[in-house]
Amino acid sequence: MRIDIISIFPEYFAPLDVSLIGKARERGILDVHLHQLRDWTHDVHHTVDDTPYGGGPGMVMKPDPWGEAIDDVLAADPAARPRIVVPTPSGVPFTQKLAMEYAAEPWLLFTPARYEGIDSRVMAEYGSRLRVDEVSIGDYVLAGGEVAVLVMVEAVGRLLPGVLGNARSVADDSFAPGAMENLLEGPVYTKPPRWREREVPEILLSGHHGKIARWRRDEALRRTAKNRPELLAALDPQSLDKHDRRLLEELGFPVSGENMAH
Image (tube, rainbow, N blue to C red; front, top):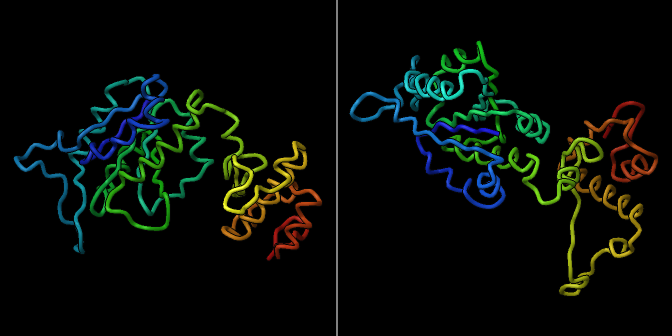
């Protein structure tokens, strides 16, 4: 996969040289290109922002440097069509499902903004011929989109074949399609079996894979009910067995017909 990132702070992406993503880059699984937006300015101060039309606080990133930068990045492979990802708190939520969708793309172009964002004409221009996604990593505002790009690149990169040592890890992730869709992963344990008077749950030492799987699903349901109860409403009733339904009723989330009710 190729990833291009245009930013006024390309040095912000030094973490992409370490850990799993760094190893994926070394092995050629992930090809990351960083670009300094100011390289496409033409004044002595390398200006990338100006006051907003209509008044109001803050500054807006100018369309000219962004347009020239994106054009030059696209020219690197005229036959290909990257998917452009614009980090913004006003975008659609970034989810595990979207991360998996991005992991299937051959080329992603990230455009992290600063100030009040990028002049809206820029994405309207490219959205007329490319897929442009405005994406939010949460309901809060950051100083810039760079940290959001780091989050998304790591979430996407770890899904690429050959990045994780154990490919099955993806299937057990919170929110993963299948058994874990709309569920949070439950608690995990390792050696020693006893630490500071705290024991590992006996079921995990039993070697009974069926009972362990049942326990893990129960704990996922419990944690989801406690930390993200709104996710339970999105569970497919057809995916719930009698044990699931009984546990959810005990937790205060009875399943009624085709819908979840609380």
